[in-house]
Length: 196
Image (cartoon, rainbow, N blue to C red; front, side):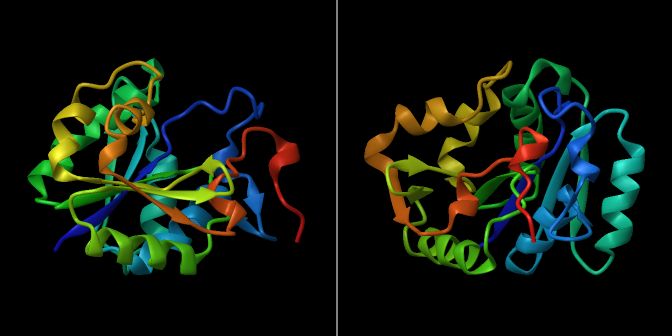
């Protein structure tokens, strides 16, 4: 069963005040690279979704992860929001014949590898369910969508992500409990970066 990972990193860091994707976390690694590093060993293919003019970031990713199957997708309408970027990527996922796609956010560098492994095992065990990690009452990322939801993802637009697909298909959602706070912490402001 082919399960891949999408890393959404086409945002504009407006709340952060500068390009947070290259901001150092955990001592030295740029945030986007740390996020990819955490998930890279778990997936056959990884699609990193960037803005259309992001060649410097694309080169940074490809140079850092030469040994991994990384595909760069430049989402040309990323300024419209996360939903549009995600929708534009799902055609590649379909073309690559992924049975399921994990959706990661590029500004979530604190997810533990054990958590990713646990979520992937759950996706293999329940291949028709949406897999969502949960810390206490809070749902997080990454979220795994089986291919039966790709058409709905392809119709997303603007800044509305795939949350609405989860909410309208709750009977098909498997929540996976975890104590990993990294699944709910996205770095929106400099204060969100954890100290070492």
